[in-house]
Length: 294
Image (cartoon, rainbow, N blue to C red; front, side, top):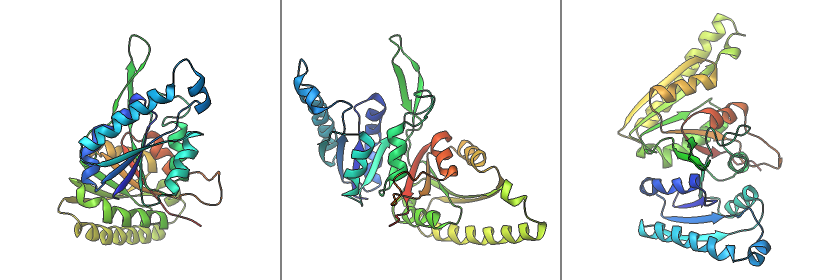
């Protein structure tokens, strides 16, 4: 995870991504590429009353210099097209790079809490994605949104989610290699879906409990070999997303780590319902690890 692509639309939410520069460095990031896709065409920029492209590039240069001052090597890329697709296409040429992108957070849009660009990038990326949660705290006197970070301590408390699927196993392996050692404390959580559990008899439920406990214990032992931080193991039954939301609130989780499907030959493939709900509703940063499918 030495390289990262920081997607910026030069808005206030994406500017907040720069507050985490020391923490990106802690994660091992050495080089950051600023990627900007304007919402207007290059032709319009050139024929407007002044050159908007010059203005935009000046801002990107300033941001690049900020990265250089923070000790990163850095460059910027200026693309034209649909923002989500350009981000995906550029990142696919650098599959080992981390994508860093802001959510829009609650209040910015009623229909889509994290923004359509961020959602599509998460849905289809073959790269790991760090989604920084940005919240709307109201509007100023001019009607502009006031935004802030959900948490400024990205690595304070991590929560690895697992349903013991291949996707979850991939995310667990990635977290062990790149993330676990940097958290101050970490949790490993499995929620037994209440709807599924209730459809089985007591004997089957006891078998599930034993199996899940054994799996969690093995994973916890493995995690403790990677970090000196405290590792808690959480096995609970209930409605999956509300249980995760409760755990995030109780333990002030600063980052959730979970697996996603990643891009496949189905261009309209979407996230599973649980992952979709988590990234939309849970008030914390999310690190999403794709399981690459051919």
